[in-house]
Image (tube, rainbow, N blue to C red; front, side):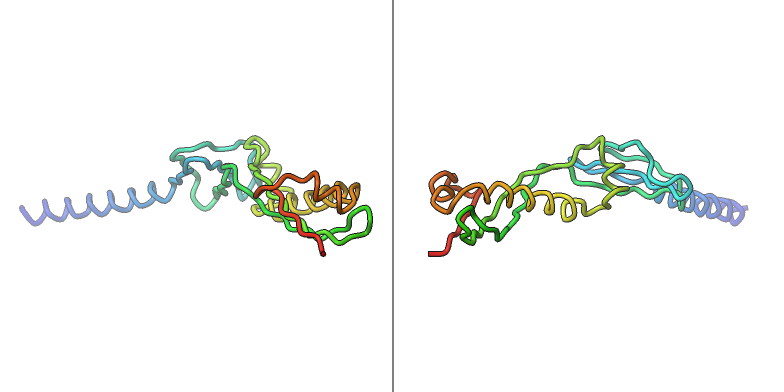
Length: 155
């Protein structure tokens, strides 16, 4: 009699452990300051952005891709020319963060490392077009001294 009870308890425990493992692998967490985009193997990237918390997904069909939405700096060093054809080494520090509602579009167009592709190329083009408007003396006079803009001119 006791053997049958222990066998049934063992089977119930095994079934409970397997069920718990499946449910646990169907859960994922989105940490504070992050957002997630769901990639579905059948439908592609879904248009909804998942906020912070614990969420369910369909095993082997869906995969969460998390993005950090904190504001963080990006240092962009550029060597360019001034109006009077002087070489200028300038580093621009840009605080940036993605717009959470645009994360599905950002992921489908550029991928997870969007800041290396889009942010750097756009910043370099704009910074070069602004620096070329000034000569070396004006750049030294008008640029603020501080950690956001570092300027080095040859002597």
